[in-house]
Image (tube, rainbow, N blue to C red):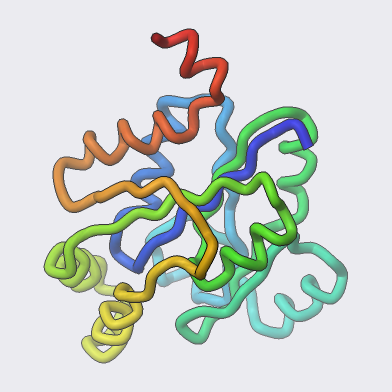
Length: 185
């Protein structure tokens, strides 16, 4: 595969989708992978394809996903059409899960992981502001935020506790191909 596949991971509320959208505006060739999620379309937030559990299971059986996982009582899938984009030599970035990184890395050894973090009080405020989860669900997401990366998985670390622009610059730098990095020096 000529293109690069990137997984951005981190706890809920850390700003992964905001960072992804900002990076895509700066890197026009970057494909943001639209996840398929068994979440109501009215839930808002990221740009995702809503589906039922039954439809997700059918699509999974057909091989429509290159990666899939469960988190927070939902099923998530990365559509297989991303392979066409990668084969064309273009980079693709998806919002993943720390828990699925080992499986993703086994399936795509060249996968590059980007781990976004933020201070706990920042996460709590962001989760409350988005209004998508109950107080109990927010507490569960905050508890899960403490989970690190799987053993043996290395990632580029980005702290998104401060100014958004600082984290965006770090993500854009991480997504630049080595040849572009050399030409920018």
